Image 1: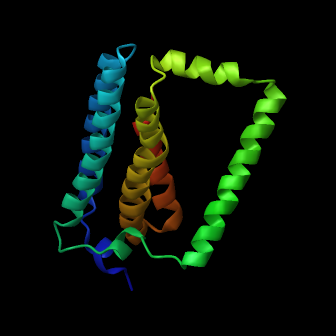
Image 2: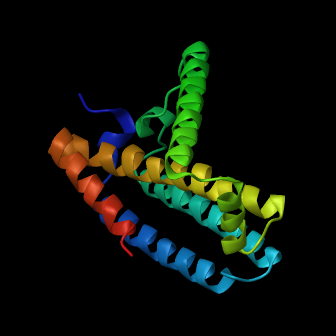
Image 3: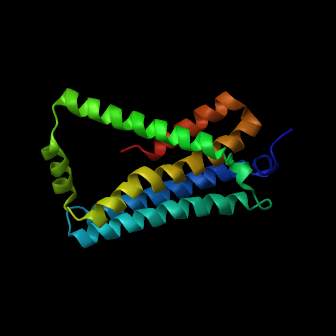
Length: 180
C-alpha cells in the first residue's frame, strides 16, 4: 500500500517543481552576483534574500503537494526521532566533523590566517553577515534541498518507479540544479 499524501501527488508536479526551482536558483545567482564584493550591508541583504528563496522553494513544494489534499509531515518522510538518539547522533556528527576539520587543517598546514582570508574574500568580517552566510550554506539551503529532492521528488517517483529509478532521477535533477 502506498503512503497517504505521497501516493496522491501528481507525477507531472515533479517537472513543475523542477522548473520552479531552476527559476529560483537563477534568481539566487542574480542576487549573489549583484551583492558580491559589496558592502557588509549588501552581503547581509544577499544572505537574507537567499534564505527567503529557500523558504520559497519549500512553499512551492507544499503548494504542489496540496493540489491533492493536505499533506502531513510523514508524507515528506519527516518523523520525530527519539530525543536521546537524536542528541547522541547530533553530538557524534559534531565531534566527527570537528575532528575531520582539525585533521584536514593540520594535513594542509592551515593556520588562522586562512580563515581571515575567507572573510576578506567575502568582503566582510562582521559577525552578523558571517552568521547569515553560515545559516544559508549549512541550514536553510540543505534543508530546502532535502525537503524538495528527498521529501517530495524521491517519494513521489518511488511510488511509480521503484526505489532505484526514483533515486537516480532525483539525483540527476539535484545535480542539474547545481550545474555551473
